[in-house]
Length: 247
Image (cartoon, rainbow, N blue to C red):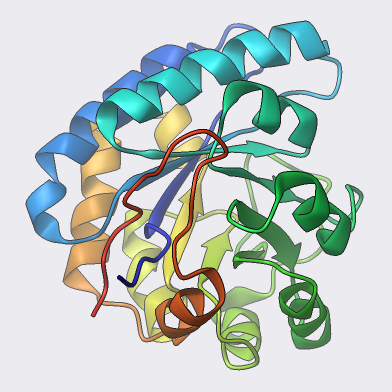
């Protein structure tokens, strides 16, 4: 049975003073309400600050993973793959300064979700060859949460990567519901969101707005086809999850 990566990825904001678990809980509630929209499950990427200890990262990731299991959502841990293993997450995501994709695949195993960051086609193709399940591509636009990022690549840059690979492309960086259409038209399978949900006055409503925008604009990507060919069944390290059927 074919499975694919969900189209909405929520990346946690664990900076001091942020209600990380409150935002995740609100987003889960929105995901349950949006199930009939056919966008697939919510994917939560646990991203922690560099200065957070492994113990604290483990505690936070474990609580998010438990929420995901209860809600039928997907849980990934960014960067710290040993914590992904420890909490039984579905997999992890690695950036340019983290473990190489091939090493990440070796750590997490053949059935885990392995996401990788890319901003140009050659890097994207190399990551896919090394075992990436999907690609986080961007920054699509200037990001209000990470000011040290390289220049935005825009929908044109997203299209260049999406046209070069056959795995789901998730556009990231400055994404808002109003920008979903041009990103999916460029070939993005979905979007990853930080500030537009974590900093929203009402994260539940903000999440619903993204689900509705994605439902209104079906992705033109080839990624689900190749996710089936490569992954066959994306699997948690400890549990099986339905990551969203596509025909």
